[in-house]
Image (cartoon, rainbow, N blue to C red):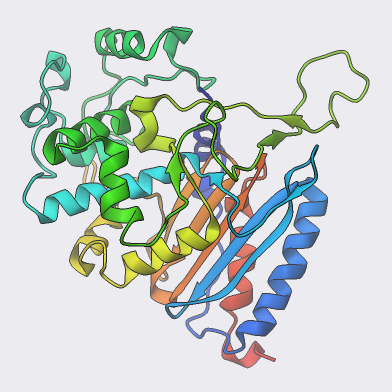
Amino acid sequence: MKFVQRLTFGMCVFAIYALPLSQALAGNSEAANQQTRSFIQNTMREQRIPGLQIAVIRHQQVVLSENFGMANVENQIPVTSTTLFPINSATKALTGVAIMQLLASGQIDLHAPISRYLSDLPDAWQQIRVHQLLSHTSGLPDIVDDNGDLISKVSEAQAWEMVKKMPVRTKPGLQFAYNQTNYGLLARIIEKQSHLPYNEYVARHQLLPAKMALSTFGDSYDLIPNAATIYATSPRGSQAPNDKQRLSKWIYQISYSLWAGGGLQTNASELARWILALSNGQLISREHLQMMWTPGTLIDGNDGDWGSGWPVLQKAPHRLVAGIGGARAAFFIYPDDALAIIVLTNLAGANPQRFIPAIASFYLKPASETP
């Protein structure tokens, strides 16, 4: 099971937001759109990104939604608006929304111990709070190893039995530590409280109201219509003379019990509709939206790195929250600037979270710089 985004979070996510933003939005979206198109085309050439989708939302309107390159290189199938891309760990944002929906209906208490909702937990896990799973401050051991595979490369059920026998890493609430165990447990809580499988709950309560008819769950092994082929340019360690240059297929696996942490396949158009539904109060209230985007608090009183399912990349003077996954997909929301940017690619290692701030700068120019 490949969770490449796990390395991405560790290396760069929390260092990419040092971009000075202006309070005044550029008035001419088309000028910014032209800059974005040129920037995307240059970036795709430089990074050898086969295919890409982008959507930009300003003031509750989609001002740009375009497709570039190839969904499948070997068969020359172009990216279209219906092409589906895996968003991997950005799926955690939808899990955060699901928890907030159940909070609003009184079915979940964020400060309750997870043992209120789940049985068969190890003694050391009993008093971990729901919000600590959401913010990656639980201190739990990780069900995946450093390569992103299930520990010991065993079956899914065996991996869960193994992780339950591992010692906790830290006291709950002591520090931020990203891992997949947290969201596997959140999926079980959602299923227990809603009486629906995780993916069905999300489909009914988010995909359906946001009109995301094509979005679905799965990985490289599932036969999903219109799914983009995923590639990588990282060396395979072979003796081929072009090993470091060749484009290769990237096969990734997301176990069923970990779909809440990384299983969604979607496209930029449908994600844009989801962000609009989220921001206009269709999915959760504004109060719960702000709660979801507030960083979790550690034992020492400091803020952690995540809210409820969302990395909080910047708190002031302009908030920035995100969904980031697989080193190939990301969406950034600038709530105070009425701006959201979605970039999905089919290149593992494209890391769009690194260049989305440059795109944001086209739309966040001071009024004096607007053509």
